[in-house]
Image 1 (cartoon, rainbow, N blue to C red):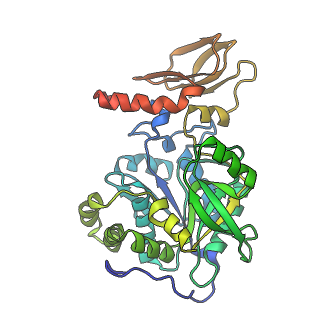
Image 2: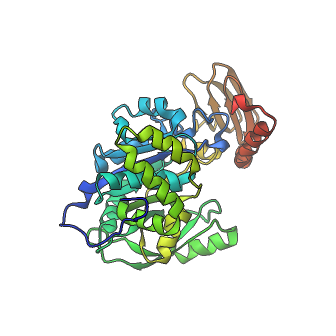
Image 3: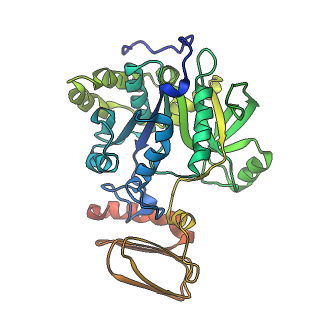
Length: 386
C-alpha cells in the first residue's frame, strides 16, 4: 500500500473462517465534559467505573470483546493515557497500543487502525467499539457482532457493517440508521442494507422514526474489511488517507515515532461517519445488524442514575469507594471521591459530584448542561480543574 494507491476490495481470497480474521479496535478518546468533575482530560470517563461493577468502562469493553477477538486487539488513545490504559489492560502488547499526540476525531483514529491492520494483513476484518459505552448482556452483544463479522465478509467485496441499537424511546440525542431490504447472508439472518444515516432529529421526527420500525440508533459501532474501509477513506478523504498510510507504513519499524510525530498533527479532523460511513452507504456498501442488547453511552450523570440501582429506601444512587452519604426524604445521585460526609435532606433529583478540588451540584434534569461549566472554566483560565 503506497501513499498514492488506495487498496481495492477485490475478489475474496480462499475461504476461511471470518472470525479468525477479526481484530477488535477500541478507540478510547474524548474527555466526557458532561461528567465533569469526575471525568477530566487526564482521567476521562472510560478510565472510571461508572456502573459500580468494579470494572472501568475500557476494561469492560475489552473483556466483552475477548471471546470474539481472543488476543487480537488494537487500542487507540491519547499519549496522556498510556500509563492508565496499560494498567487497565496489562496484557495489551505495546505494538497494539496506538497513541495520539493530540485528538483528531474518529476518522483519523479508526482510519489509522485500519491502515495498520491492512499493512499487517490485508484480509483483516476490523470491528470498532468505543471504550466508554455500557452494554449488557454480553451474550446478546456478542451474537450481534458475530452476525456483523459474517456480513462484513460476505460477497466479493464485503460490507461495512454498523450495529444499530433498537430504540426504546424517541430519542433526540442520537443519530439514526434507516434500514432497508434484508440481506441473504448465511449466519446473519437479521442483516439489512442501510438506506441512509440521519442526524439527530427533533422530537416529532424521532417519534415518526420509532413508529415506522425502520430506524435504529447509531451507536458508532463498525465492523468491516480493512480494505473496503480504506478504499472509501481514500475516495472521500484523500489527504487523511495519505497521511494515515504514511504513518501505518512506518508503524512496525524504528521510524514509527518520527513519522507519527511529523504527520499526525497535519491530519484533518473529521468523524468516521462523514469520512467513510455516509458516502459508503450512498454507494450501497453498508449494512446494519440490529442490536437487542441494553446500550448506554453514559452521556451525563442522569445516565449514571439509570445504570446503577438506587438504595430502595432513600432513592439515592451512590458511587465512590468509602463514600459517606446520609439521606432523608431525598432522591438523586451522589458520586464521591473524598471522605467528606454528604447529607441530603428533603431534596429531589439532585446530582452531587464531590472531588478533592471541585464540587458539582445540579439536578438530573439539567445534567446535560454540565458541559457549560467546563466551557466557562476554560474561558476563565481555570484549567487546573479540567
